[in-house]
Image (cartoon, rainbow, N blue to C red):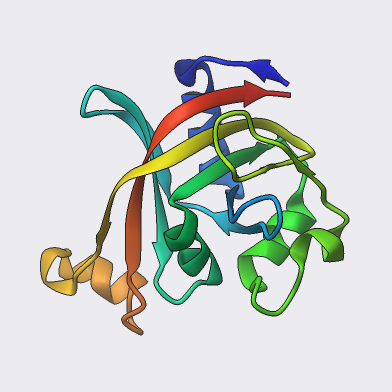
Amino acid sequence: MQQATQSELFAQLEEQLSKKGCFLVVGDQSSPNFMTIGWATAGRMWGKPVMMVAVRLSRYSHDKLNELKEFTVCIPRDGECAKELAFAGVKSGRDFDKAEELGVSYLPAEKVRVPLLDRCAAAYECRVIYETEMHEAHLDPEIVRRCYREGDYHTLYFGEILACHTF
C-alpha cells in the first residue's frame, strides 16, 4: 500500500464512478460491509479534503455508517471486479456476508477503523464531518421523478479524507 495524493486519485474516482461504480465500505474490522456506489464526489470544503457519498436511508450500509461515522471508498482496478460490483449493488449485507460470498478479503486501514477491500487500485479513508438527509422540497422535480419515485432518499455524508492509497 502506497500513499497517494488526493488530486492523483480524484480523476481515477470520477472515471470509475462513471463506468461501473466503486465500493463504499462501512463497519469496523469485526463486522464490515460493502456496497456499490455510483454517486460520490471529492474536493475541498471547509479547508479540508472531503469525499461526499450518498447512501439511501433503506440501505444496511446507512445503519452501519451511522454507527461508526467512518467509511472507506475503494476504487476497483480498471476492468476488474465486475462480478463484485454487480453483486454488491443488489444484495444486502443484512442477508449476505458479501466478502465470504465473493471471496473478497479486507485490508486494515491506517487512519480509520473501517477496513479497505483487497483487489482494488486505490482507496480513501474518511471520517464523517457532516451529514444531511435529502428532502423532496429541495430537489428539482425532474430528479425526483427520475431517481426517487418510491421516496427512498439519500443521506449525504461528507467525510474528511484522512488518507489516500494506491495498491
